[in-house]
Image 1: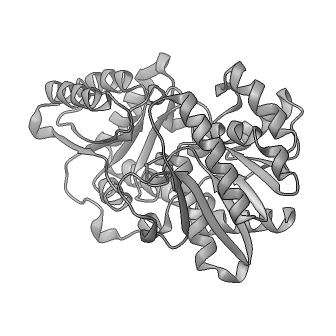
Image 2 (image 1 turned 180 degrees about the vertical axis):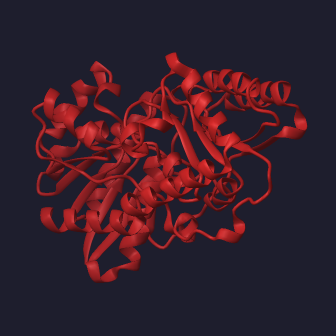
Length: 369
């Protein structure tokens, strides 16, 4: 068996695109032992899970609040774990992990490594690029999740080679669509979900819902938020209370720090999934919603246009009325709503299944190793 070590600066049980995608790869490799790969994840201490809860090995290291101290901890932990594990390939999944690896790469020059950029090139600050680019020039492959981001790297850098593997979602919780679980009542529910972070722009989401409420009656909203950093709980309280003021308590359903299983249930109860991000490299939540036959209406930022695939369901913040009009149209015409759900479900099945994701990585690993 060939061993692949995945380097991460966030716990793999923290909800997020990189974590869930890494989980999918590792679970897929374990379930397809005929591929000949053994995954091991090196990440901070898990939040609520235990390493034995997973089908693959997880090596944990401590994390604190101080960024410099965390960097020093990662350097020591990555170095120790990689020397002990002696992987055939190192797959770096996050930008700070890439920067960290740059400090010890010279000690592992006999090991091949690749980096998956789950962000967008223009999202990296000059200081980050200063540390990332020298390491990437020594990598054996830069992987992007969208062709859009791959083009950015090709046009603006000399980093090569580059390939694209679209993101995915967990087949354990999202792979099979169960029609009987999809909401069938006449209520109209708009869903929102995501972490507390500036990229999701929750203030704009509140503005959007406030304006949407003026056009749709009755309007129900279901929202699930995830927290990680200090101060996030206060922001969640503000968002929930503002939505209650806009909609009324009876028309609002809230959730906090849901598991993947709970998120699957959440999407079954949503008609239209709304994305209000000001920055989105891929849009994993959009794919989760697609897998549950939700219509997806999204800002036209980053990789989202590539994921959504139909301009009718895209809007900009300067033209919020277009997004509101799209949702209003779906509210008024149930057949259009059902057709949109089918379109997005087909798009998920044709482009973003976990099976295709795992096979694409297996082919990449075969090529490099």
